[in-house]
Structures are given as structure tokens and as C-alpha cells.
Amino acid sequence: MSSAEIADRQIQINAILQHNPRDLEPCTIHMIKNLKFIFELALVSLFIWPASGHSQSTIAKRPNVIVIYSDDQGSLDMNIYGAKDLQTPNLDRLARRGTRFSNFHAASPVCSPSRASLLTGRYPQRAGLANNAPSSFGAPGGMPGSQFTMAELFKSGGYKTAHIGKWHMGFSPETMPNQQGFDYSFGFMGGCIDSYSHFFYWAGPNRHDLWRNGTEIWEDGKYFPDLMVDEAGKFMKDNQTSPFFMYFAINMPHYPLQGEKKWRDYYKDLPAPRRMYAASVSTMDEKIGLLLKKIDELGLTDHTIIVFQADQGHSKEERSFGGGGYAGTHRGSKFSVFEGGILAPSIISWPGHIPVNAVRDQFSTNIDWFPTLAEYCHISLPQRKIDGKSLVEVIASEKAKSPHQDFFWQFEGTKDNPQWAAREGDWKLLHNPREAKPGDLDADHLMLVNIKNGSTETTNEAAAHPDVVKRLQAKYQQWITEVFTQ
Image (cartoon, rainbow, N blue to C red; front, side):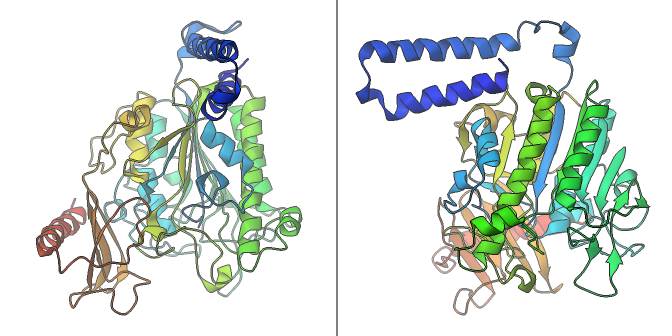
């Protein structure tokens, strides 16, 4: 029995003990608790003694790492996160096998900066990509090649590296994946594509956008998420005897919302635009399930760290039929520094090492994956500024403190009137936020809120706490000056 299967048994036993103890005889409860102890002992033993047929060196080698990054997924858009009208069984199962976060944030509310910050462990401004990268081949802009990426980090630790899926961090030879530390790359370089023709479709002229290792390729009529799963499977099979890092950036549920027919039929009775969006989410979940199945078939599940995260909040753009995503009581969406634009579902799973079916409420961010994964894999961090903080202690204990006392966002707006937010503990100061309504902001375009679980960010407390406003303004000014100069 694998550690993943043992973890599943633990989940089932815990559920029985939590929900049905009064219906059980004392002797039955005693027997179940003994079984729980046996499974816990078995899980520990898998990582103390080598399994049959494997050497001690094989068991001790560094784990594989797969980072799955979804695209424009709502803050709560998984069944396990509260979206009860969605079917997401594969992601829910991954969450139950590992640890999920309820207070996890992207460093930007839009695609390119979020991805740049993930892969560098830095604020987008320090990563050199504070806005969306171009979607035309050869266009200037994108994340500078001088940045040190997660792929380069893992290469320094002896890993094979792969990018599969969306890139959107540069469309010139010096900014494409193979120049950013990836041994292998398959996917598209711009913001989005039609999933069957692989053309960037919303702004002319029409441009084909499908590449393998920097060379344009054609796969006419083949569904892009299926191509992603196939490419990922080949990479893992070819590198199963050595550690690998794979960045699996699936282009869903981002528009054009091309969910498969079975899911379009399943959600046909939901109102628009939720039904279009839901079909795309469940299609994504199914493809991720196929990826997880390939990992299991290769016998890699017990030795692979899997991270899943959305890049930011859901889209309300016209190309998304004006919405469809779900953020609960959280205000805002993609492009906004309100919580609905930056709060993201996030999971980490590593059988035998990560707590099972655990929830962490501490404030955490996507730039934290860089140092966290480096620590788990015993790889030294580069000798340069990293803004992320390791989450290893947070993942291990619900009592650990968040590694961030302060955090900052800046996106869009004019040079003199940008959209930004500064967070200090539960205090959050917003300046000129997207989706603000008349009366939300004071004369200085500021809004102070106190973030609690379920905060709706509707009450401006700036007038009542001028000292907090002044302090957070000063912190933001210090941060924005420093982040652009180092």
C-alpha cells in the first residue's frame, strides 16, 4: 500500500471518529483508534525503511516538484473551498491528501506579474514585470533574462526542468522559457489561445501561438489541455529516474471558456455566465486528474511534491461573458487589489511529509513557494534578494505565525495615481482600488479596512484610525521606492 493510499484511509477513519462517535459501541471506537494508530505507524515506516526493491539512496533522493498554476480561477472556486455547485473531485482529493490554505494571496491581481513573482520569489516590481507581457512574437518586454527563476533554482540542485502550458512572461527569444532555466518547454507564449486552433484570437491580426523549445509547431484541432497532459506525461516518463521540476500552467478557466461537451451538458441548467465558467473549471479538474493519474502510474506519487494554486481571482471581462467566478463575500476580481482579485485557492501535497487534510489560515503568498520548495528539497537559495518567506513551519503547524507582518501590492493606474494596497497584520490600506464605488474612498482616494475571515471590505475606517493610515502610507512609500531600486 502506498503512502497516498494510507493517507486516504486516515482521512476516512478521521471522518468516522469526528462525525459518528455516538453511534458506535465503545469496543468499535477502540478498534478504529487502533487502526488509526496502525496506519500512522505504517506511514512513518515508509520513510524510515526502504521499500522492497529500492535502495536507501533511491528513497533518500530529492523529491520531484510539480507546480500546477490555474488561470483566472475564482478565490473559492473548488467544491472543497465552498463552491457547492461545482464538481472538482480531483482537486478536492488532492487537497484532502495534503494541506490547503484559506488566506493565500497572489502578489498581483493579473496574469504576467503573478507568474513572474511565483517563479522568482520576488514582488513583480523587483522581478521586472509589473504588468502584462506582450502577446506578439518578437515584441519587446517581459521578464528580464537576468532574473533567477525557480527553474534555475532546481537546475542548480540537479533537477531536470520543464514548462508545460501558458507562459505569458515574454515573447522574444531572450525571455521565452528555454532562456529562463527550463530544459524543456511546450505551450503558448501570449496571454491566451483558442484551445483547438492555438491562435491568439481576440486582437488582430490572427497569430498562431504554439511552441516547443522555442520552435513553432502545429497541432491543428487538438485540444490544448489534452496536449498539456500528454507532454507532461512524456517528460515525467523520460525523467522518472532523476528528480525533476515541472511548471504545469494550465490555461483554464481563462477565456475563451472552452469546456468539454460532457461538462457543458452537466451544467446546462446553471444561469449564464456561471454555466460556461463551471464547465471550464470541471474540465480543468478532469485534466489535472489525468495528470495525477500519470504520476501514480509511474510510481512517483509518494516522491513528488505537488503545489496547486490559482494565479489570481476570476475575470469579469467581456471575453468571460462578464463573470461567472465565485469569491463568496470577498469583494473584487481580476485586476483589483480587493481580496477577490488577489485571494487564491492553494494546496500542497507530499505524502508522508505534509499534514493530511489540514487547513492553514495564516497569511501566505505565491512568492513564498520559492523558498519553501527550496527548503523541502535542500537547495540553497541564490545570493540575491528574495521577498518570499518559507512556509515550512506554517505547513507543519496551524499554530505557527505567518512569516509576513507586512505585504504590498501595486498594479495599474497612472504614475501619480496608481492602484495599490498595503497590509499590516489585519489592517489593509487600499489606494484607488479597481471596483471601488462612489463613497468608498476618502478625499485622498484611500480606504482602510480590517481584514478578518469573510471580510467584505465595505467599511472605510480611515477617518477613525488616522494613525494606522499614516503608518501604512509610510510603509508603502518606503516599499515602492526600495522594490524598484534593488
